[in-house]
Length: 328
Image 1 (tube, rainbow, N blue to C red):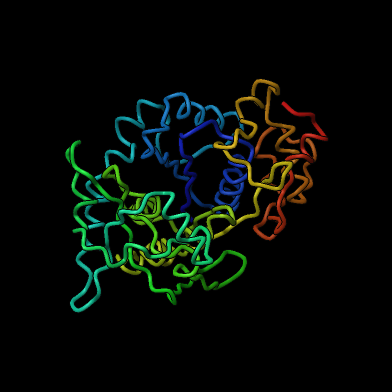
Image 2 (tube, rainbow, N blue to C red):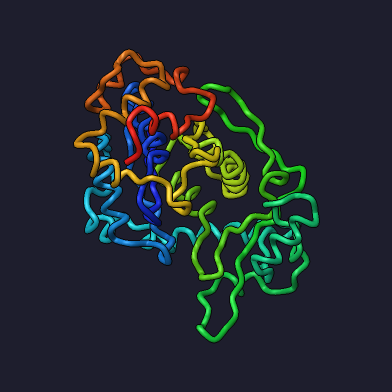
């Protein structure tokens, strides 16, 4: 097994991140696999050095090690930043643009504002799914690909996904599962207005190149998996198409929403400042996993008895942890 932990340094990590990282690590360590640390740092608008440092500090505090990937901020910048791989992402986009003989062009430039996208999706009765407003746009797709001059207008690029598109993935627990990217994602963005790859393309290209064969994600990213698998079929990505997936239940806040950096969820840094070690948080996770270790001091103590079938199907409530331990 080869899997990855792939945090985004757009804010401080929170307990929901810790839950996903822990499950990834437990799967790899109990099945003789390796863990790669990939830091998804393309979002330069929100990128901060302190957020990258927080990733290393949080993993160390949790006791989660990794086999390949950066160990320091300096290594990220010198060898592992996604910004060093822009040519690889561009090559993938060029391949999508080339398509096949006689095939309808897959890429098109989108001139819609965010407000227009939301309005048209709502009017179409599919909130959150692009309504295809610019599908017949005459704007050359390269207007959203070539790095624009500051005085020139640029456009994000979307990929044309048939409404009936479907893909299959191999789940670690569920077996083969069918996903519907045309229904759930519509024509999603593959290249951003700022001239850089969108998440769906960059994540797929990285997983393919680093030969990941086990991908652990929250259930909220199931539509993204469908979109990326559809891209993988267009790009001929053998590794990604053969990978197994585990989409785990989320850790929810008091209102029933997922913990989120953008929503100011409790951070792991706050927990580190209150607790000398991760014991209380690990104990909370151990109870939900039904593991025998009730008072773990390190993540390695959760290895005994862990199997993928122990991962709960229902969400975890952050309020349960707060009631037991008290808020940070």
